[in-house]
Image 1 (cartoon, one colour):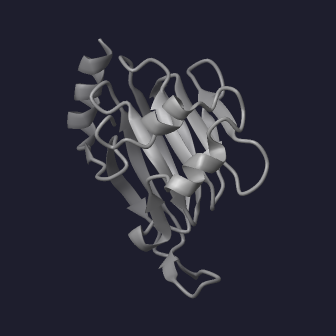
Image 2 (cartoon, rainbow, N blue to C red):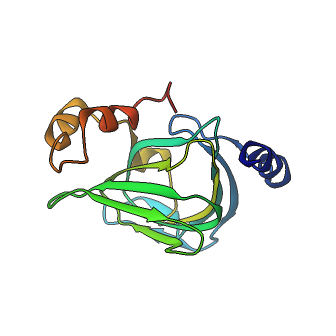
Length: 170
């Protein structure tokens, strides 16, 4: 059922493959308001997208944004978020119907997202502030960061870190 529902959502929402990170997406809106970041970039104040993880693309690989990113679970899940902060321990958060439905992903943190059950789906809406741009995003956890985080806590195994960094597996 979940694969069929994911196919319905892809068609109804006009979703496309999110190149590089994986998953499915479509831009909903970009703010007309412009802001200047501390490093001098002039960007839209925000942009909002539909985002879907599905059985054919159950993982959104490690990525780091220089903007805050708020995800709201609309349907499906559960979906697991793993965040690597600049300091302190890694964080794991699960969004699920009937539970927590909002994840706040602060700028400057490596984040990966995966379906807790790869045969399920998760439809989310995400707002990035200031707006996402390719120049302000990094995709794929570098080897030095991988080595830093593997085993930092018992659940963050080499197998998990690598699973979340493999675009071919995503």
